[in-house]
Image (cartoon, rainbow, N blue to C red; front, side):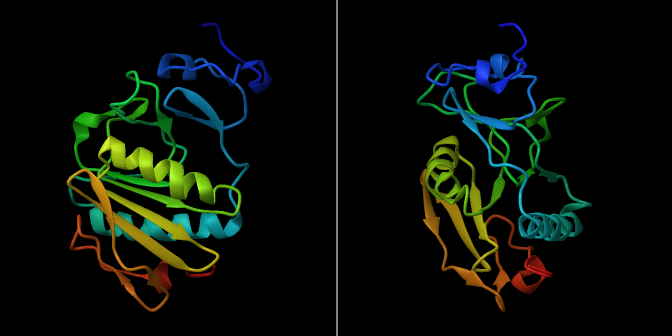
Length: 195
């Protein structure tokens, strides 16, 4: 496949691979979900960015001297999805934590991160809550956080027997207790600071 310089040149009814994805040279951000192109929302809101930066800082403080690594979008994650051909799912989670350095290469992550965080906005909430929930569950992402800056709450799902089990919702005044990383102790007041 030659370089594609305009999003409008793509056939959205066709399926693509990661090799095709690497040939996209247009300005729009896209994800590849089971081979299909999904255009991402325009630049995130200031509140989205504040939450991302706040959580990233909390993660950095916790993981800076440990083997796990923290990455923020844009960062390509190639997910292993059993129900589709290899290399047909590429996502850019808002934040992810990867503890197996063998999954990291120069292009991003090739495999499932241990934890993925998606910060929802009115334009992408259905995608993050439904599509990515199912995708991350199928890919074996051990923990998935959905962060809602509007309502200032966090939903945490942990993978047990290949299915996500949700913890009670967390709101301002609570602390995040991660089943996967029990040493994490993050105040939601810090996550939603200045939001």
